[in-house]
Amino acid sequence: MKTKTVIQALSVVCLAGNLLFFSAAANAMGDDSDAKKTPDCPKGQIYDSKTKSCMVDKGSMISDQDKTQYAYHLAKTGRYQEALTVLNTLKDQNTKEAWNYRGYATRKLGRTDEGISYYQKSIAIDAKYAKVREYLGEAYMIKGRPDLAKAQLATIKGLCGTGCEEYRDLSAAIDGHPES
Image 1 (cartoon, rainbow, N blue to C red):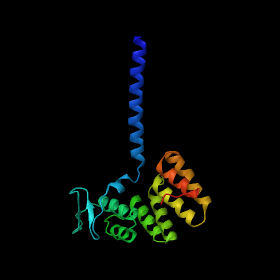
Image 2: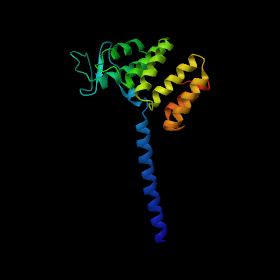
Image 3: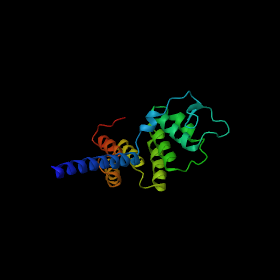
Image 4: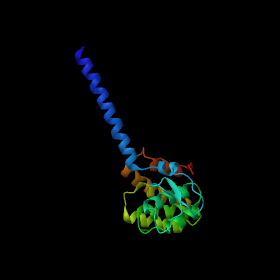
């Protein structure tokens, strides 16, 4: 009877450990949850995480990280040109996220080739950035190049497996069922 109790206790500990591990792994991969949590600000204002409010960026008071995240939020909510305008204000425009989000907004504005060039700049900075691989694959689908999209999907599989959001989303786009 005592052995059964010890086994049950160990099972609970293992389960809890696995939940913590997989939760941390999922967070490390990144997703759109930050973009979904970011509030909408009036045109010309940017959400500042320090003050937790929308602000006009006077004298570059808002961090590049907040500007980049807000630009992504704008793009994900269909405000593509505003996203590009915010990205143009970054002190350091040469980051994997800035290039990726610039590519995303540009592609959504119908300038797919230009978007692809920005995605490639993002990959040059970090070839293991799964989100840019997803968006590049989606751009290749728009261009009628499923072979290149599938190559991006294979790369994503190597980076985060088949369970990550980037893999699922690109796989759906290749199968003709894109989310957005």
